[in-house]
Image (tube, rainbow, N blue to C red; front, top):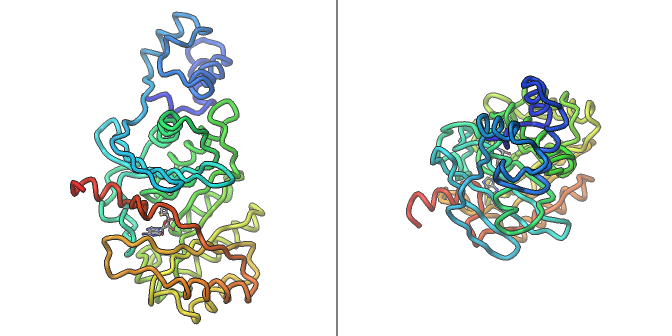
Amino acid sequence: MNIYGKTLEDLENYFLENGEKKFKAIQVYEWLYKKRVNDFDKMSNINKNTISMLKKDFTIFKPEIIKRQSGKDVYKYLFKLEDGEKVEAVLMLHDYGQSLCISTEVGCNMNCAFCESGRLKKRRNLLPEEMTSQILAIEDDLEVRISHVVLMGIGEPFDNYDNVMKFIKIINSGKGIDIGARHITVSTCGIVPKIEEFMNEGLQVNLAISLHAPNDKIRNKLMPINKVYSIDLLIKAVKEYIEVTNRRVTFEYILLNGINDSSKCALELAKLLRGMNAYVNLIPYNETSHLEFKKSEKKTILEFYDILKKNKINVTIRKEFGSEVTAACGQLRANYEEGK
Ligand code: SAH
């Protein structure tokens, strides 16, 4: 069992169950996350017997970096996990801090038509420790402090709900990596029952919804999940989420040339979201091996933006990162497998 998968509470219970004092959990957490030691023997304020017990029950394992590419303000990593599976993470350097986009699953079953990740069907969930240690490995590698985490890499976080929640608790702990809840964003393609569950977690974490279309006709073609949870059901759940949590929601909208980027689509989107405590993040498409999808023209993107603005929808255009490092979800892995 990799110790990076334990919440502080798990470790406290572990010590109590083994007849030890609970505060040892905090000491161990500090060694792991504040002092960053990789070896139980270096935890010098913990007695020998306890160290032997920890060594018997846990490992301290970080994934191996098998590839790193960098571009302007962006680093892309390919990791090898303990069982040899590979996942990616992308670090973006913003003026407000360092934001890491991590993967939550090996492969993805959501099968969105434009997305590279779905080329590999889901093989398994990532464990909390495999998500936590992506952060630690990159912080070690670049000697940076990651301030923001977005769950927008390979995989659907709400298809791996329990592990993702545990991961959030681990990195949010003030005794650990201490990433503020408001600096953590979970992005979902719209698994409605999980949005309902998530709203009752009492977390201050941000929620982003990959919408990408203003109506079912277009969305059904882009995102198979829409055939299970239609836009109506999705918007209803998001409205409820906003009411329960009092938190603003982000809608992600990739602009795909000739598919969802007309002014009619913009108006329809504005109508759909009118009055909601939400904002739209327009995403210039990062072209992939799905050759039928092209990014929208700059002019079209700006027109789309203007229509939303005029209709009183909060909207931003996402800064483009990493097209030179094939940063779109799943691209690095796919290229690696093909020997590129
Ligand atoms: N499964 C989750 C999180 C992973 S995808 C979700 O669907 O939200 C993270 C975001 O990147 C989603 O909005 C997804 O639609 C978008 N995305 C996927 N491929 C992309 C590409 N080639 N260019 C731009 N955005 C992409």
